[in-house]
Image (cartoon, rainbow, N blue to C red; front, top):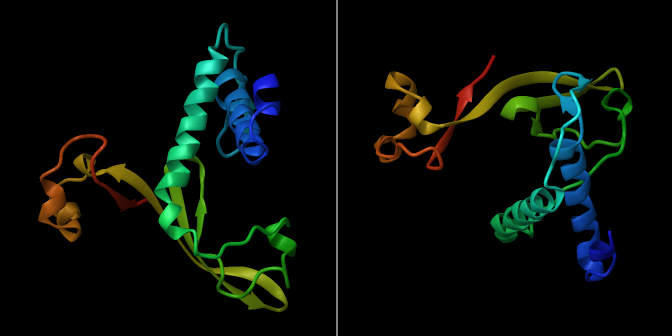
Length: 158
């Protein structure tokens, strides 16, 4: 904690977030799925390496979206069932869910309530895992790659 508290002020919240992620994901005995669950306690975890790895991932993520800094976004602290008036109509496009699933959503107002009027689930998968006619929409350029870190595609996920 001393390292975090002595870091530049503008970095402290990021460093704390990386620590929280590490405590829950790598060190803790909590698992997330459709529900929160408890797992067996972990015998030994290299917290420093895990935390530094998460700091590096966060820095890379921020660098990856640097060219999108001009885009607007908003966080609404509310229960989605009672968010009427807090969310602009047609302003939510996607929800990131457990297991790498992305839900693309369409919302509307009905009887003064925000309701989902359309929803489709997709999973980001390595292109090498897509074969045959399923890969046709992605073009021949992507078909030449077979490494796991290479191109990915959204595959329909019901």
